[in-house]
Length: 341
Image (tube, rainbow, N blue to C red):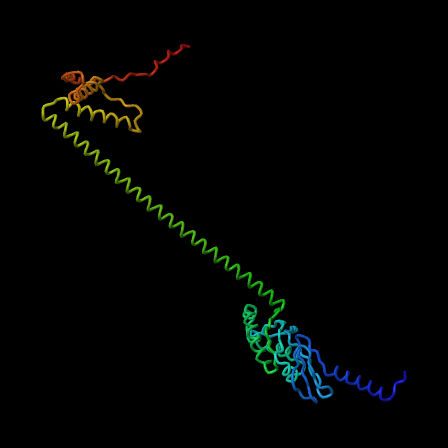
């Protein structure tokens, strides 16, 4: 089949139309935004999906990623406020909010954000002491985020987070810090030990005080009880003496015998209790004690009765005889007869 000139022209036109349609149809993936330029001038931004542009007049300018992105900040040397040199690195998270501004307001966006973050890290960390720098990392992150986000705002960029990954002081400084920490911990241990010793001494003193108070109260109570017992004993003795006095006044001779026998017996008991007396030699008449005991029994029968009939008046005891002195017996062995030679 031989194609004529007209057929060739038609086929060429169809192919041209198809090429024009393909040139005017643009598909934007999700998470991206395309800028459209007409004769080199920005006109609009293409959203994700199928979009149409004017072929040969408009073209896609910049393909901007609007998803949140991570930018690694390299390690750099920082001089702190107290002239300590440390190494610090960080990581920044940013997102393109305005693709046109990000495409046409700044050239090499990532490099700009990286250098801006590094500069602010040196500024923020350089205004702090080393101890403050190591202990207030959240404060550093917050200050860096506020400063960097404010700086990239005209570029249509939103910095969501700036995090300091690591801060490395010099080796000699780390060793000095370790010694300082050890000394501080030893100081705290000594303080705690001293406080524990002080508290123990206070508790022991309070315990001794309470024990002394309880002992004094016990001694006072014992003295009170002893005084009360003595008082009752004195009352009993006074009452007994009163009864004996009344009996004597009534002419009862047995009361006198009872009183004398009681005192005589108590004197003998006290002599026998003496610790320095092992052998006691004294004139002692058994009949006197027996007579005194008989008088005591007679008084008891007169007072209480024996329960079998009328009370019998006991005979008065025989008068005590003169004490006999026992001649000392020489218990020495007789001398042995001397042998004649």
